[in-house]
Length: 136
Image 1: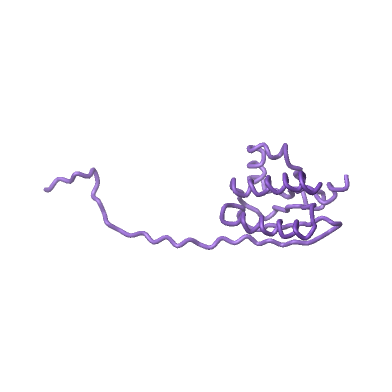
Image 2: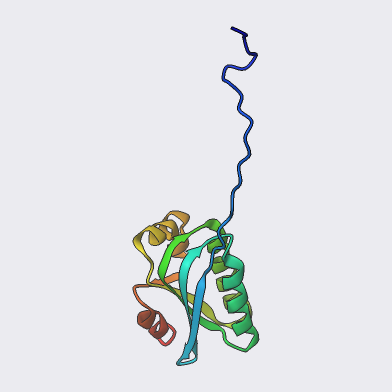
């Protein structure tokens, strides 16, 4: 039997990985001068650009109060957190506006807690409460 310099039998194979296109469904509406943005999907590196672009378009149209309804967001990555932080800081600093976060799933809420963002952002149980938060 021939001995091999490898501790295992090397196998030559090719692996084809097809990356599934990740989609974030974004729905917007305006109520009491507050732009509500409903997200549905994973908020990660693949989708954060789309979310940021949507919010920036509204900022450019003169809207500066936002509710980010994340009831249907099952996962948030650091890239999604970055978008939330950057937009909230920009709205506060440059426009006297803000971004309220609403309807977090328990696992997403935990990410906000672990990162300390629950102390920086206003987080509400639902979108209605988040909208009212602008008048209180």
